[in-house]
Amino acid sequence: MTATQTSAVLSAAEMDQFREQGFLGPFTLCSPTEMAEWRFGVEAVLDSNPPDHKTKIHNRHLDKKLIWDLATDPAIIGRMQCLYGEDLLMWRTNFFIKEPGAKEIPWHQDHNYWPLEPPIISSAWIAIDESTVENSCLQVIPGSHRKTLPHIKAGEDMVFAEMGDPDYLDVHQAVNLEMKPGEFILFNERTVHHSEPNRSQKRRIGLAVRVVVPMVKVLTWDSPEHALMQISGRDPMGLNTITQPPLD
Image 1 (tube, one colour):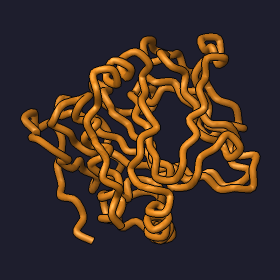
Image 2: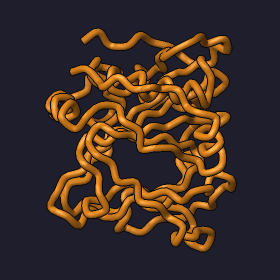
Image 3: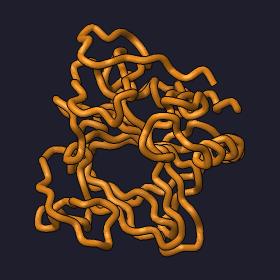
C-alpha cells in the first residue's frame, strides 16, 4: 500500500489561510483505490484487541505499524511541518466510526477536553470511508479558532458529555467538508467543528491524528503505557515520555 506521491509543501497563501480560517484542505493522501487497500488493514485493526489501552478505536498507532504509517504519511507531516516546524511528536490517534444511526458529535473546540499545557495541537482528519453530507461529514466554522468557546453540558442525544454553548455560535457560517476516501484536512485545537447524526445507511470512518510540538506537556496519560513518539526533528524540551513506533 503506497500513498500517492504529492507535494507536501504549503504555499504562503495556504499558511495565511490556516491562520485566518483555522483549517486547510481537503488534500490528497492517496487515491480512493489505494485507500480501499488500506481499509482492509484498518478494519482488521479495529477488529483486534489493543494490548494495553482502553478501546479498539483509540491510539492504535501504539501497537499497529499500519496505523502509524497512515498517521505519519509525508502528505500530512510535510504540511504540518510548514505550519508548526520540524520538531513534531505524535500524541494520540482516534478513529471516529459513524455507523447508520450514530449520534451527533456536538459543536466543540478540541482543547476543551484535552489534558495538555499549553494546548497546542495540529490535527489531521483522514477519510477512510467516503465522507458526505448524507453520512455525516465533518463541518467547521471558518475563523472560529480566534476565540475560546464556552462549553456546557451536552444532551443525551450527543456523543460527548460537553458541547459548545450555542449562544456563542453562528452555525450559518458552517462549511461541509466532504471528502473522498484518502483525503484529509488539517485544523487546530480551537477550530470549532461538528458532525450530524448519520441519517444514511452508509458507514463513515475517519482517523484523527493529534500531533504536538515539544513545548507541550501531557498532564494526564491515557494509560501507564501510553507515550509520545518522535515523528520528525528533535525533542529539546524532554517534557514527556517517548517511545518507539511499532515494528509490525
